[in-house]
Image 1 (cartoon, one colour):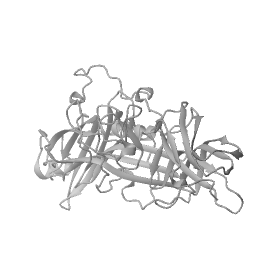
Image 2 (cartoon, helix red, strand yellow):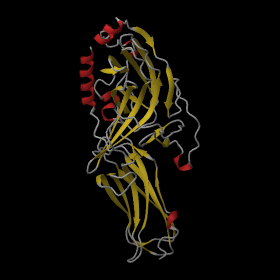
Image 3 (tube, rainbow, N blue to C red):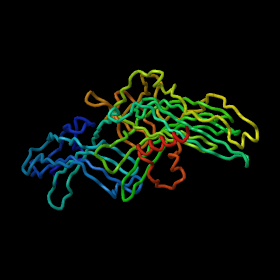
Image 4 (cartoon, one colour):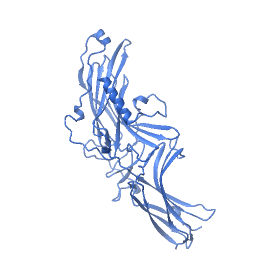
Length: 424
């Protein structure tokens, strides 16, 4: 019964908290042994797995998949002297191991577990230690990632019972992929070909996480947004803004088939309700860009050419109305991270717990905004959970939860190109 004294003091230690796939995980197990007690086998396992549930924050997984499971025997049966003993171990992580992830309906977890067998009718002693795997997403491996991203839609609407008009909404981002701390440069053009003022315009960074259980479950949330003023009647308005990317899980979890992460920029106009969606990637290695020239700069991307004549009903009622060019002022930002707009980002000071503090061996461990993955920063960061209301991609804003799948990246691009062609 004195085999292990004060077992809660037994410690599993890893030299690092974060590992790359295909690298060794080094650590040690320290236990305290009773005086000349018979020793049962001591085993340490390294396990990587994913679990998904139909219920929020439920760990009774309905679907699971395992990525690796290796076991080492650190001590066989025998006798150890009383006192403290340390057993080193090493596991080679597979190159296919997916990035760690945690969300409300599932998680990708990697951990080491130690078990000390006890005599019959006694409870085995166990302890465990989580660690994190990061498989970096290099945005430069994605085709055309450095190209601008554009979507356009035209909507006809009625007002004042007998009148009608058109709204042409075009949104363009400077890239198709971004990393933490990078600014999404966004340009929006609105052609208000009606005698009615529009409501405000909102640009949002959306996150969609799909969990594969018995059915697909979709968790969508707004990460950040910025709001601009409305557009007056018979005006062609231009709105230039930027959204800073906070710490977020990467878009692709290579090796994981149960959890998919996607991001979108949604630009929506209120009254009349019309919106466009730009699919984007969030990665770990930034896009290599040549210096911007006037022909490539998002500020100089030409807007979609559309006829400026009003609908026939308007022309008959009030005559021809020329389109005036105006700029839209920004009303407010809703950015949930304290990122600086300067090229050298500055962060507020954070006093982490001692077991999370950065060291020469590893950077500081933090938790990201939105559905979650630990990320690592060389400086100090203040992660703040998103608190804004849910905004869904336009095709699904009226559907009940759980939502049907938003379109894939390729489908979204095809739809955007089709809308662009129809609007020209």
